[in-house]
Picture 1: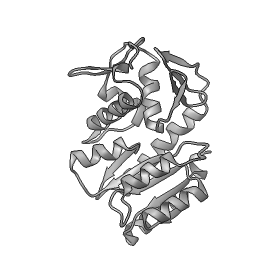
Picture 2: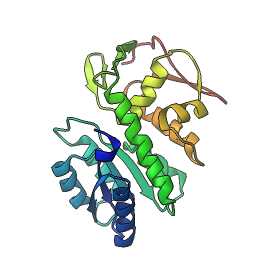
Picture 3: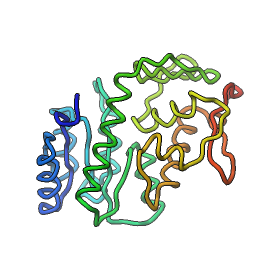
Picture 4: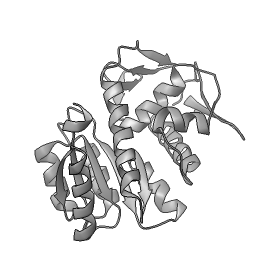
Length: 235
């Protein structure tokens, strides 16, 4: 998959906005499908298996959070899908919840079409780099991270991570016990920064702790985060 052959599903109930996003992405060489609501989006994602989804948070009947949960948890996915969430809200709780259910990045409306394309390209670049990775597996206690297959296991049991969660864990795990600032993580993992970026990092760290173990990543107050090389086994 290259960026210019990537398939993108745009989920947006406001037709003019959906049409504008689709037209801009198509002009950049992407294949684009549009869904006006959550249920249509679920069926479309099952059928076309997109590389990335641009997902509005506020949708009729089924909101973007539920769409995100169902798409990422869907059976039979043989490749990761990146999720860029769009929201008209600027409330911190709403944004963190969106990231917490598996979105990789988000933009607050109104946004620049150029910035949207930049975010899409950044997400796809990360997925391409990860797909071609030949780095050896890394162990942090009973947590094993395999960059070649992009799989994570805890005590032998596979744990599902979103593409961004995996990239963040890999960035921390490759140099265990070394402290990484939020700004460093933003540049290495997200490739950009904005007004909510520090909270973006915090939310993804919380998700990793919840899915794997709380003591896997330690907080260095006022600086950032570090992975424990050998975290104490949890229950």
